[in-house]
Image 1: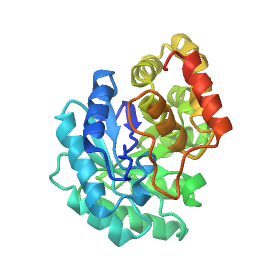
Image 2: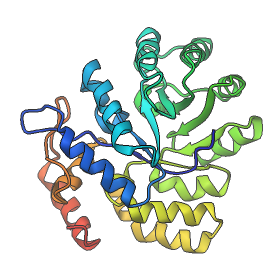
Image 3: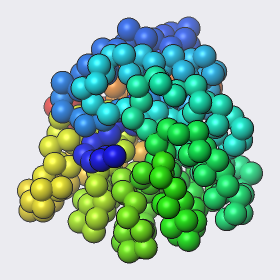
Length: 289
């Protein structure tokens, strides 16, 4: 399997009553595809997956696959900190038309290295291609390099999303195995690609899908001068989308852009007014609102 380019870590739009806004989701998917992204990642962290029930979780994935109509790849978030739950969610997407599943490092329970290996390999045994998701800032646990190396031998482990803030990890992974690496940090996309990453699972592409996709295509084409110019141009947006816990700023920005509504599910809520004001200025400066 080839995973390369820009994969949007999609937000999940909600109606004012907190229910999933499926018409807005379909419109958002079309807008993303029309603006050149290579893939969509529903119900990951950016999709507020911890607060979606199982039925909603699966319906968002089905809606994404149906609306995408094979135009882009779909990596569905079906991870959990319970191996049994992750296995069951992943079984539910077999035959659904997804290209891969995104499997987050089990959070809160902080398994040891052998537990991590058994967790990911058990999910991979379901048969859906797996993208590992290394995000110690949220999970409290890094996937050790030797565990990544072991997991890379599993025929269904196809890639890893690196969101640990380390460019060096990309080089280390590429040095020890043939696993595809996708950046999980927009502001580190360029240096990660320069040392071997194949693309990005991006938050910023929720807001600027056309510009971000072009930026990544330039980097992958080794046009580092043009890619560096785009990095510098959009760096402030990359930064300001993380002024608050993701996806608060991304959803707030999209609401200001009239793409989705402003609703969150607790425990997430709207940002403080000073953050909202700074975000509005940034969007105005980029002529997004």
